Length: 501
Image (cartoon, rainbow, N blue to C red; front, side):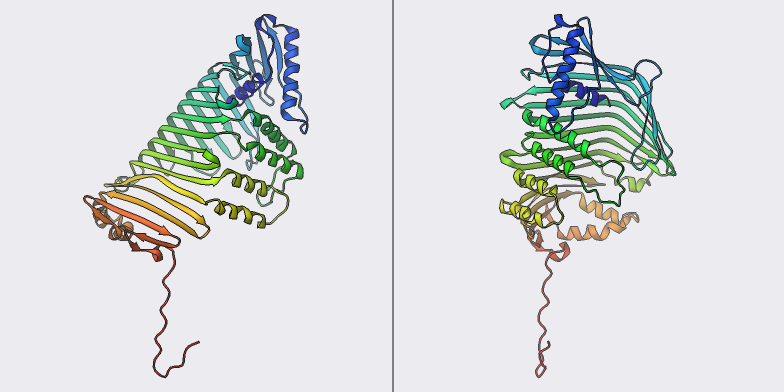
């Protein structure tokens, strides 16, 4: 809620240019209100009925006060609204002196499948938001927000949840780059986050995270596509079918909503140059009553995408350190990985091909025949590549590292290579022979050891797959990998025997 209101205010101030600080008064506040209304109408476009602005703007000495009511919120004191103090400064820029939400309050909402309304109480001991915004995009726009001692309690007929965190800081910047485009960076840190929840008839779950750090980077934002994207998104919301849709029912979009979805797809063309998201959790602890708990010293998740020369390159980066569980028997817990890292990727697909698939997926009519030319186009333009840029994990005394890639040139034709290296593998196999808890994995370990190639103290597996044929260190293992099975040799005909039919 906090971030949404902050971003909304930033968008408003990035619209029109207004009076100087020494001209602020009631007339200027009213003019700014009208100017923002006209800007919003222009952004949403003629196909969307422009709503009345929910906020009110008043003048207060050398700055404006923007008040944004929050429907459905109940507070013990003060107005249930977001309040922002902003002041125009030199260079047609805005200084955000503060943005505040009610320090405490209560609201209710009905969630999908919740059955009844969920009532939420929240409290914020300290909050501070400041920044500078340049509507002309000639200089960077920056915003910093801090919250401390935040708590929330949600209660409904089927669930109960309590959350709290000690401190949250968010820094956002919007910087002009080449060709009139913009680069957006949002960097946030939350410390001391704790949650306790219980769904009806299930065991309570407690989660604690010492520190959570998230970074989002969006490079090369096309300013010309922002307004069409916002207008189409609002259009979808306005044309969306009213009332809940049951899970077993198929949602058939009305023509108006379908058209707005297609406008979103068009607006997303050349919308950004690249996107990257990263999230790091430190000191993670989880506990389920009556079941057990686990801890992770560090968990990292990253994902991103770009399209150099019009071809997609997307990736996921996953890593964790020191997974532990005091609930497991010590002999089993000893084999939990101390480090895991994996980074798969997808590349080579033409963005124009993906764009056409999205348009056909939202076209009116049924049937999958319309996708056949799109699939043919993907392989006609070179197919695509699946990569495993990083693979690393340990199991007890064994450590495995590897890389690989597969180039798919048709639905049934590909070429793939992988290189795996292991140390301590023989020790792991010996332990599996002597440990009843690990003997179920022994056949697989023995098979892998038999396929390995010795390289000093290391074991190596070089895997090559061409179409359905797969080899490991030169040995054909297609039957094990599910590839082509060898054909049965013809039966030997005995003298005087008639040929079988």
